[in-house]
Length: 249
Ligand code: ADP
Ligand code: MG
Ligand code: MG
Image: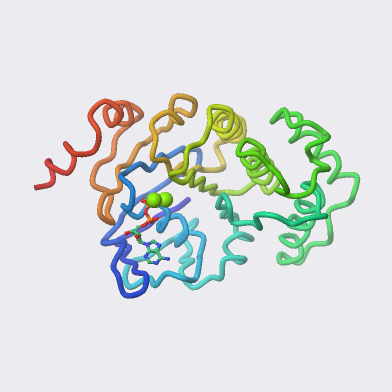
């Protein structure tokens, strides 16, 4: 699904990623953890194609095709989803109308007609039921006055509707409450399939109490310095990151 080799990237001349390698196969959930400033969000943004970063070396392949030259929209159309990629607040545009537009734009980019309204409604109903999203929520104005949990609910709903091949959830370092963590975890657990892959980026182990990842990676100083199974997250919770830094010396 995703193969990154020797990725070097910088922002404003400052090297952030320094030879990062990762391979994510279809059907897998990977967690990327690591101390603040390690480059986790940078990695997510670069995979999604955000333009502030300069890739100075290495390759990023999605299903065997290099994507480094593609614009963010093209990557999205190819099935890459990054949380918070979409506008934060659009007064007057409902959660439902926003996602309808996003889906039809993706179809248009592939030369397809708009999804018939009947099919769209059916999909909205199925996905919202699966994720236990209230009908009233779907008619709310996008992100206007949303709580942290509601923002997460919207994000997971977008993910469910867009059916990405590769979803990247960057949970950011700001505290998510338990409600929001459960929404994210529940969404990932329900939406994972043998055909898609998920990368969950988190500073905190507690999200991984709800999502059991197949692999856990530690990103430190622009590289993945340790990988393991879900037990690595527990070890990090108990011991912090310093022991890993010491192993590297
Ligand atoms: P993480 O998500 O692991 O906390 P980030 O990827 O956000 O780390 O940041 C990695 C490094 O890149 C940090 O040293 C941060 O200060 C720097 N950085 C990130 N974004 C910018 C930016 N827009 N301009 C300058 N430096 C940045
Ligand atoms: Mg940070
Ligand atoms: Mg971050």
